[in-house]
Length: 223
Picture 1 (cartoon, rainbow, N blue to C red):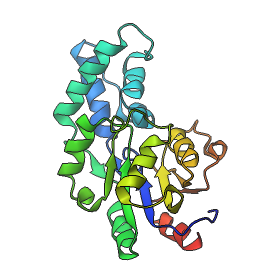
Picture 2: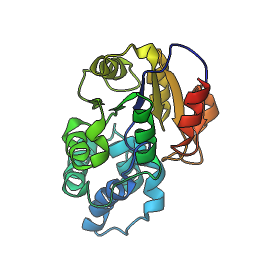
Picture 3: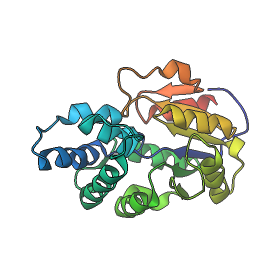
């Protein structure tokens, strides 16, 4: 990973990077299908698109895009379904808790920057003990902008009290890498999350990539 200012903090995307929420996201969309008399779709079909939220889940469930006239109503139905079950099967990825403890042991601050709205981020992070030590949690509607705009990352750096150039940002979507680079942060692609086979990670121009959470510790030693 390229050098730069001494690392003082690590920021993470949420879904697909810290937590595996695909089972609840997929179930919320699939409930809409079965409620309409359509056949259920396996979780394996939903999982690669879980990082795209409602857009991804409704695309799998109904083959629609955000510019479809029916999308806004279906999205709100999806949100209500997800809100009712979002803590049922969502779990922290293996190795993430150990990673966070190791970061804190090194004196590094950490936080979350997600495009998920605070409507969902708030209950999730309050209910999962991992986030008790997060020094910044920035949702998709915390600022007027969402990733790939860098403003959410600037806001997280402000909450942490560190310069953006002293932060590393870890995410599993190209938008994460774009936002991190625009904010002047070093970027790491998390390939263990929801990336489908079509993801061309090498083209994202991240500073590094990891295939498991704990690999980040070795990268930070080298930075």
